[in-house]
Every structure is written in C-alpha cells, then in structure tokens.
Image 1 (cartoon, one colour):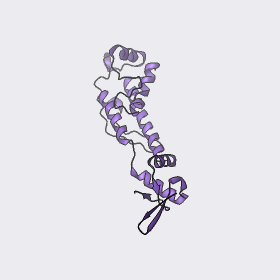
Image 2 (cartoon, rainbow, N blue to C red):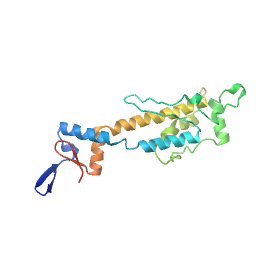
Image 3 (cartoon, rainbow, N blue to C red):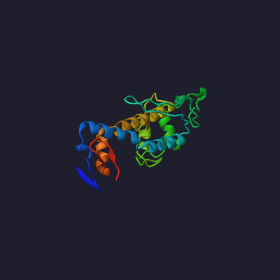
Image 4 (cartoon, rainbow, N blue to C red):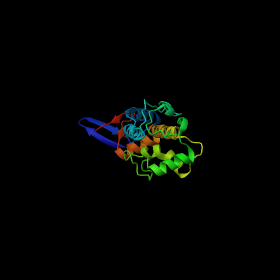
Amino acid sequence: MKTITIPETKIELFPPNELDSEAMEKALQWYNGVNHWWNDENQESLQAFCDFFTIKWEGYQYDLPQATAIYPDVAQLDLHHILSVEEGGEHFKGVRLWKYFQANDTLPDLSGECPFTGYCMDEVLLDPLRAFMARPDTSLEYPELLRQCLESWVHACARDYEYQQSEESFIESAQANEWYFTQDGEFYNE
C-alpha cells in the first residue's frame, strides 16, 4: 500500500495484488479497455508480408476463444508470382516448389531475424515457410502455403490478445509501470 496526501485529503493507493476481488475486477476492466498494446505492430508485420508476396487483403479479426481470419481465399488473391507456369495453370507444389524457391531466391530471409519490420510477428508469418523449406510437403501448393502463413499470424495474434486480457498480464504491466489503484479499483494517475 502507498499513501499520498493532497492538502486535507488522504488517498490510499494499492498495487493490483493488494486489491480485493471486486476492486481487482474493476481494475482489470479498466486495463482491458485501454488498448490491444501490440495491434499496430501486428498489422505492420502483416502488411509487410502481404506487400512482399503481393497479397491484397481486406481485413481480419481474431475472436476468442477461436481465432478466425477474414481475408479472401488465397487462391483468389492477386499473387503476381503465383508460380502457375506449368501447362494448364497448375501451381508448383511439394518438392518442385521447394526447388523453385531454392533456385530463384524468391523468399525473404528465413534466418529468424524478423526481416519485414523487426517485430516478432514477422517470424510467425514465416514459420510455415520455414517448416516447408526444412521438409517439403509433397502435396502442398503455393497458395495453400501462403494461407497457412496468414492463419499462423491470425492465431498468434489471438493468443497474444488473449494473454493481454489476462489478470497475469495486467499484474505484470502494473508492476512494471508502477501503477496504483484506489481501494475500489480506480486507476490513479499522479
């Protein structure tokens, strides 16, 4: 507990772990209403990935507990390098797709250095590509591989959002930022 004195007023302030359950619930509601802290960075990673692969996306959402993506079917997207150079417009797949990637240097850096924005969601987007390059799936076509990348991002954002809404995240943030609350759970800003 921390006590501050404003002329003729005394206010007792508490860190979250000292609040009763009702006050904790109110403080957690305040915290959850503030923001999704990393949303902008998540979007920047997605946009950079889509720019690299020439994907036009319309939007997304990550609803809890199930993450759902709202974007056009990847097979219908504007993919300028869709690798449909075979007779009949079929897509490269499996080992042939892997060989194409190896021979033409058409992938971003997969070394784990967050090549698009420097933020960790870059790597989440690239995880399915990295797994494919390590062990090609013989039936996997390029559009499906890109869809897996997009779904990987949506699910990671949902997990991130779910954690950020948790009591554990709230207490961690409150301690790191030295936040205090009144006895009834109101955030106190000195």
